[in-house]
Length: 106
Image (cartoon, rainbow, N blue to C red):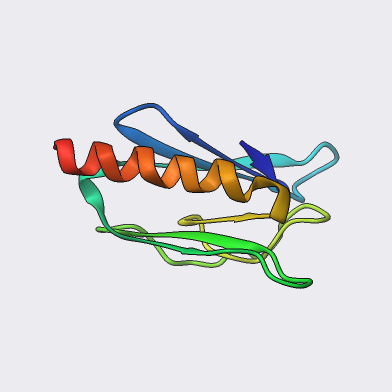
C-alpha cells in the first residue's frame, strides 16, 4: 500500500516500511523490515479532519530516529510509522488485523 510518499508491505511474517527521501538528483528510498515476532505493540490513529492517520509499530531493538529529509509530500516520522489518508482507512484496518493474526500465530 502506498500513501504520503511511504509504502508498507506485509509478507505474512515480515513488515517492510519504505520512505521516499530527497537524496541526490533522483531521490532514494529508505527501507525498514522487521519480523512480526519483534512487534511489541501496534497503535493506529485514524485520520481526522486535515490530519493523516498513523499506523505505528513498537518494535524491539528498532531505531526511533525521525527521517529528516522526506521527499516532497512525505512526513517527518520514524521508520516504524506509516502515515495514510482517509481513503486508505479500511485497507489499513485489514492490514492491522492480518498482522495481529500473524503475531498470535507465532
